[in-house]
Length: 255
Image (tube, rainbow, N blue to C red; front, side):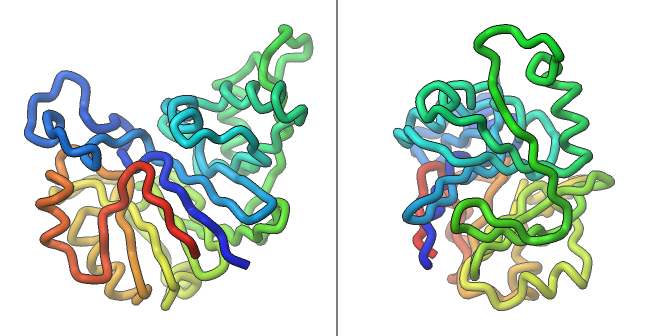
């Protein structure tokens, strides 16, 4: 079974351009240098799933003309990955469903805190209707798509990546254990975060991400969760090995 992956956004938490910044990346007219917060859409012939609903979720859904959504999966609780969750109420109304939201217990606690009105005993009319479905390490099916969780660390915060068939998506990480790396070796496509060239406390740098791709040996790799500090899309592309590309908003892959 083939799946289609659409990059809804490929930026770090600030987006690109960065507010009030006048660097060459933020002033670039190249559409590939315009990045919304990181998220992907995963589709089979019958199932559509979004991984992460950041602050740009509404804009991303409208841009891609997505009129049906079967579930949301959350990698972790940072605002740039959950802040747009309220927008699933449109699918409640249009698709006539309570939206399944797959989350770890840790992320569920954050959702209750950040979206208290969704979980209130007395609910205000028109609020999003969601069903939180807990997962941890075991693979789980959404429709006909099997998601295998991958454990990574974002400084001291556990984050989930996902393996789907011969494709894996890793965002917000700066450490992957050897046991989890084994699940990521020799894939067809690996998506990995690559924030900037300078060291960072919680993200892989450009060089670290390249080294990890060499270690894991996918046929093809794409970098995401990119900062304006990484550089111009076209210039950075020239520095990459042949099997690595920078992802960009709207990029679609058939896996």
